Length: 560
Image (cartoon, rainbow, N blue to C red):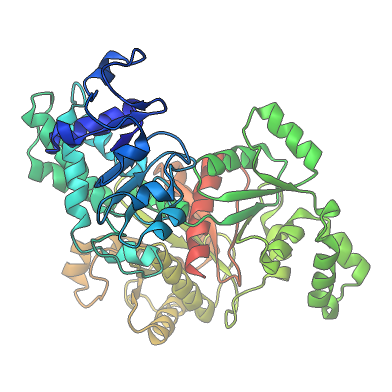
């Protein structure tokens, strides 16, 4: 039984027929009841699904039915209707934003139901993310003249086959190590599964070639190999993080609520459901600027620190935290008027999950205000920073390029371990290179000894971590060179985490990659803070803010 006779409903009927469902077993309903030949309000494309010999109402049509697919409106399916269906009923309630029946209501109506919605927070989320990007990818790569129904069938079969396979570790890690296996609550691969790109796009491309609509045929094996390479590229890595962030629904407070870049970023974040933004600033002024920019941020909270009902409680708590560090109660209240401090207190109080700040203030000043409230993690000497560097074919992580000018060997080791932990939390296995101008003792100098000692400290604290040094940058990223000259190195594959010996070298290398190598930078990502918070810098774009927020949301989820 299909409820909805628009393009989604009738398109699903055509796919059902291709997959072998007999026409006499298909009933299509809309707001006016059964699609039957006597109706005078049908379009020509709907008449192909008309049935004269079936129940005229949806409630009657569902009695004993095996499958319900909804593509209509919220609330049209009742618990009584679900209970009237056959054994082990399959209910796909795909209307948005409100499904035909709420997930909880359907599940409570009977225990044997197999349920899916188009809402990402429930099992079996039927999302555009599972289809459109990969169908278009396959079609574009073979220069298909059109997208056929056969290509859509190929995409559906690829997803169905993948759902029956073992789930890769990075997917389970993204869902707090939840175990997935094919069954009533796992009918579809999770959107962040990197294998979807290869399987679905290749299936679509192959079908396009078979049906003669591809202008650039390619052998499937060769095409799959090229897609597999793309999974490791910077853009694919970022896309995976954004998909993970969408699963989390984290609250992110932005202290620069009047800044145009932040407002444009928040519009994207809210629209793409990457995060739930909270803007700090005078509400009237913020709303006026939003209207002037023509942005849709109607559902985004705007908090004026001075007028917030939480102001006095925050001021009391901030005074308690800082009273033995030279601050008086009246001064604590004045500090809370500053959005950076207020935002940090929201984070401390659990009223936000992540904080993004710094676009309109000096980095050092903002960092100082932040650390006064949230401070470093227990056992951490100093916070540091990490940049995610997206190149056309690789993704690297660089530390520390923004905080510590001349770290000691202890601090350098700490930075390496924090960087590795952050990279692992993003679903990537870290391989750490401790950089210097020397290769494994080739130059004996205080600078190289510091890196050598830091490497030893890090290895002692994390014996299972893949880390080596000191080494030159070229040694870290050239496996052939290491194999020939330094076969004893335990890096294996090329390093993806590059730890610089000081801020000067790290910062220069970072901006060289950005401006000469045309890399996309995400960061600085603060490492070692007690709570998730990140600072953007002058000249940042809305895209930069969105990317950094996505990373922060994934980090916040991992810290739960």
